[in-house]
Length: 283
Ligand code: SAM
Image 1 (cartoon, rainbow, N blue to C red):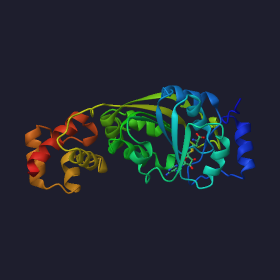
Image 2 (image 1 turned 30 degrees about the vertical axis):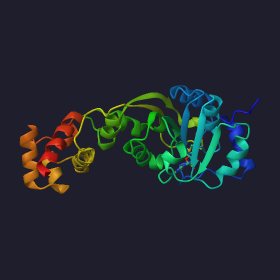
Image 3 (image 1 turned 90 degrees about the vertical axis):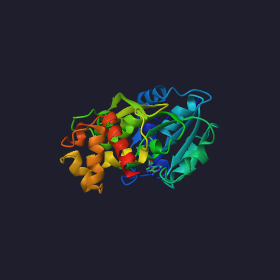
Image 4 (image 1 turned 135 degrees about the vertical axis):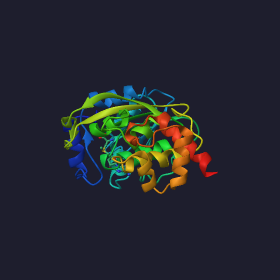
């Protein structure tokens, strides 16, 4: 029988044995709650035959849970000290592969190979948004993303138009996926305890984006412009972002959207209509 890593005593023991100190800079907060590990594995529906990409395995806590499901796990870890630790803590599993490196730099299609895969992670909070954007924008064949994030970030991911939390991240996540919060995770489920509340969020990746757009780049350019200066009207925010006066005027006329509204009230459909009108204008 293999020792469960997800307990305070085993985690402390491993950290002591390898002389590890949790690195704040690398966002290291290790899970010490087996129920949370099980919750993530279940939310991902991990099973034999699945390919799972884990980001930041740490000392192998979640990795072990994923491996126990029988899935094939590829885990990318930036901390150079940890592969040697993982080689021991996960010695009993032949369905785990550790890839040393930065998730924002590794060639994901190369390490994951052909076919769909799942993503499961207790993310390092200092780069949550860049990681999510990187995974989504590349149109990788991901079927589901199950990640631990700061609660405040999760609320932004699921926010609706007109709410304070609604922003570029909400639009991007909802454009590519159907997100929902699976469960809350208290600070005491980690060593060291983070200063913020956490949740596990599940993003079911859509087969087609939520709205059809002529040019995805233009869509996100408009979204970024709108939220870059969210207190301005959409027309002024777009001017600030470098769109010409003529292009802006033509786009509002064509799309029938009121140029005096703020971008933060726009649905995905409205952003799409405006972006499509700009594509034609630019021709
Ligand atoms: N999965 C472990 C757990 O649940 O206990 C550790 C989670 S800890 C919150 C985040 C992990 O991500 C750390 O092990 C950290 O070293 C790693 N990490 C930080 N930045 C990274 C990056 N850019 N690429 C890959 N891993 C990274």
